[in-house]
Image (cartoon, rainbow, N blue to C red; front, side, top):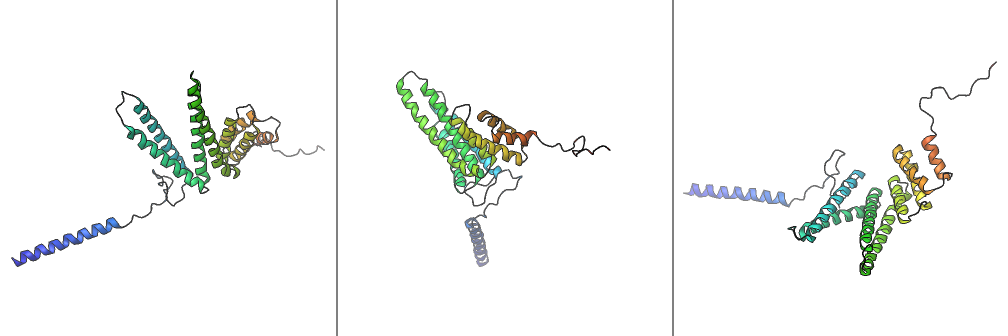
Length: 262
């Protein structure tokens, strides 16, 4: 009887030790996630201390667009009497998109130029969306609808100003993608055939893209320069010379002065 009691006590002690080990392992904080390599499938979570790279912000931007699309579907379902759903399908995705946007903007506020580009892009696309909403209201016959639509113009202007404030530091640091987007925003703001301010940023994009070996993107920026400036403008002449007046790598004859005949 005593042997059986001792065995039960030992078994109980073993169980207590195992439970204590499990609790200790659960209470131990997890090791911080390291920055993913180039082949990693998932990027860093927003808010971690490691500095993300451009591909991480591109991934988060795609996730933001996906969540916005799902939120839009949920909103349409709420407004439809034939769709069985609740506000949760909309709010869940809208909250996820807002969390991603705020995370990218936090990195942009810290001086990350890659984050600034995507944060500015999100703001610019939001401004375009508000302008589309304004067009819907402005085409209505009732003047009250047109008055209500004016608030979308105010929201659009606010988002455009925010996009420019986010992009300006990166553009002045000669980041070609930010220069290109700044040119697009300025051209969008001022609907005219020529915009000297946009020309300056398109010049920045064309020059830096060419320097970085991205001739196709430089050509795209050069095409926008032609739309917003005179063809004899010094910036356009310079970019044209860079793009089209290059010495061939293997000329069919040496480019040396000919020897005088005797």
